[in-house]
Amino acid sequence: MIKRSVPDEKSGLHPRNRHRQRYDFALLVEAHPALAAFVRLNQYQDASIDFADAQAVKTLNQALLKHYYGIAEWDIPPQFLCPPIPGRADYVHCLADLLAAGNDGNMPYGGNVRVLDIGTGANLVYPIVGQREYGWHFVGTDINTEALENAQVIVAANPGLADAVELRLQRNAGAVFSGVVQENERFDLTMCNPPFHASQAAAMAGTQRKWHNLERSRGKPAGKGMQPARPSRKSSDQPGNRLNFGGQAAELYCEGGEEAFISRMVKESAAVGVQCLWFTTLVSKAATLPAVYRSLRAAGAYKVKTIDMAQGQKKSRFVAWTFHDKAGQRAWSRERW
Image (cartoon, rainbow, N blue to C red; front, side, top):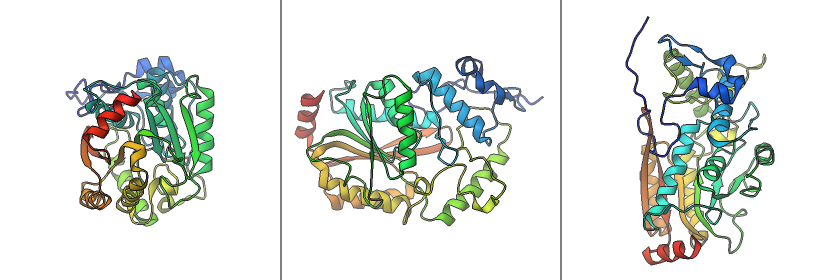
């Protein structure tokens, strides 16, 4: 039997993240009995699941959302991304810190805090975590009607979400804020997990790398970072045609990749700059940052912050910017919170 020393906490996660501890599968199975069918002992004799199994990963997410956030009903169509809950929660907690920093260290709670989630997807995880942890109000946008229809099912099925989450269709696939931010509407935060790849071919190559890495890591314990789940394979599928472990095209790639998407977002943000306190976006590749900073200088952002995040060995970060000076930021928080 292989033995090893395992830390009690996952390194790098935010102090308020409910998922800092290793997954307690006994507790999660108690909350969501369907998970029991996927739990087995790995080579270290630790309880785990097969993270290459889409249904197993989705069922784990259901258990996490039910146990920690009181979400009794949650599901996504097989072709959509199945998100890693711990990493998504970290982004939300870091956003709360961002608001607190401009509010004399006081964390703002309640529905007066309004957050715009760009590309909310079918899973609705950011609004779920933000509403359950801080009571914030969310507007989620997406270009995919099926994603929004599924998100609406989640909203309707879980008490407390209907009054806190509004969904809007972005009818222009080339726009970010235009068409969804209404005149004189104000948001305290915007957030986004932009498409990573620049093309379908790049997305496929990324898939192959992920499968290779996942095969190499089989047998490792749970809690070392969740891989995106792949959709159920149809008989007509060919290995090279699976774009990802899950995900619609718009979730995975756009022309120019994340650099082009974020640059467009920054440019558009200037047009609605006074309507939002902090704009933010995840940036997957550190190599993208110089281009993002150039775009922000061109847009005339008053203040730019880069906040690093980590989940185990996976490094991530988000960039935040505002068009309000210090006096404007203080006035904003005093008026709204």
